[in-house]
Image (cartoon, rainbow, N blue to C red; front, side):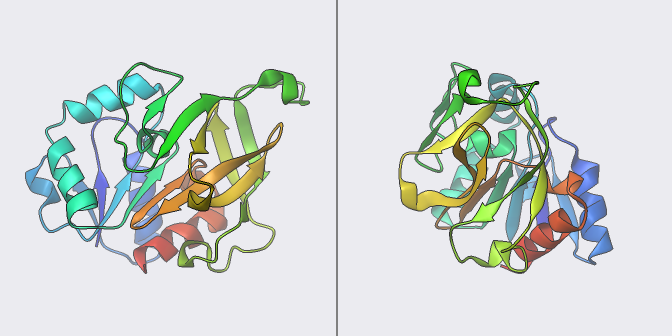
Length: 204
């Protein structure tokens, strides 16, 4: 059972549809009570960092999520801004992040980007795993995913980097620490590559 955290930010239905295709049961959590008995969590997110954090902080689910993730070690995956929220803080806003992974969120340096349209980083790009983890099983070679972001996840501990992508230099497009996973790209928009990854998460 996958529990998707619905705090008013992110395309929840897109994840539900992917899991329906691979025959994995899904539950949507909008309240603290909905989180009871969660086995695996997805934290989606789009838009501005502070807005997403405010929405989550006001949802009534924050304390329960901290207990599930930090106290009970329930596997969780943060996606796009959901990944960035797992960091300590972000250059995009003033609020603290969840502090689930020791990282900070930084803006891309446009002077190092050679594309005509520099920011946001938008479209398909390679994702190269640097850790041998089940999340990327079957995606070790020639995997591409869809990105849409202006800020990136900077791991303070290099061992937390799970995969890298090149955009004006390499950055951590996926991170991992214990039961906590983060991916900067959108698996729900990445066709069969994203379907494989989300299915892998269900099997962890």
